Length: 164
Image 1: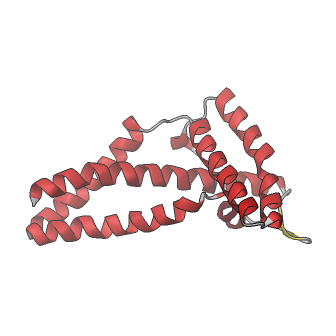
Image 2: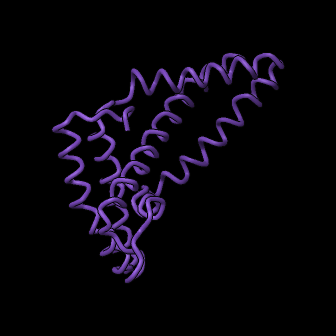
């Protein structure tokens, strides 16, 4: 059983680290785009940062967030099932594993994460077109030039995901 936990821990750390970086990127975008005061949620209401974050978050990120919560609960529970003290060690190992993956393994450049979000938006636009939901698709088209602008800025300034 301990070997199974030792196999799951690094995989969970990579999954959690990737999801948290995507989440941090969409949160940062929401805050940046809100400052521009360009995006409307209704004809007379400006979008807030959480509204914008919801609009640009890739469809699969919601499931990733659920998976992250499940992993943070499952890992110590499984450790407790093995032995009571393994739960604490597993939690500490998961925390340090996520930190290590973010610091060493995953790309640091913010432009990489912007591309991930941009691809998610483009896929969502395509899905809306397939579903004949042209209003939503057209509203998301407003984000493409804004994302391209931020991607270019992030690339030129070598912005780091850990500093946003």
